[in-house]
Image (cartoon, rainbow, N blue to C red; front, side):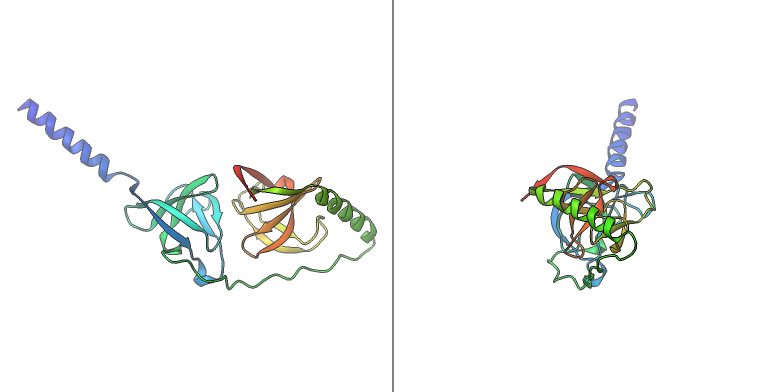
Length: 213
């Protein structure tokens, strides 16, 4: 009787372990298809639920991803993008590659004017000169990492804080591709708008192991 009881407990323990697994294993290809084709990025989270403090990355619209497993409720998939792995909502993934993004392009603003215009332009020209010298053959990716998770960062049309923003909604975890380096600025390609802009170096962190032509 004692042996039978021990065996029963062992079986129940195995079943409990299987039922409590975070996701069912398996690999399948999907494409990011967010916001009805308007090109928004897909949030990657550390855990399979929505919370303001568990966003660890963003995957651009149209990106092909490999889902390694599905949550028990079928609403979340476990995947990787760059060097980051986490959970994304399955409702924003499709089995077929979506069409071109419908998101409107942002038109860069003109050169700033004012009393400090000459100083600003000299600074900008210096940064442009450095970046021209440091244009990358092997590009790499950076993640937007402001001091606070809720802080929004700017993608500017030129490398100076006084210039207007091409985007003002970059958030923690957004991924940008670096095409040139300045002293205090990075020239980056924004995958959401397909435009090249500038972001302060101190607001980014290089993603290790990610480089490409």
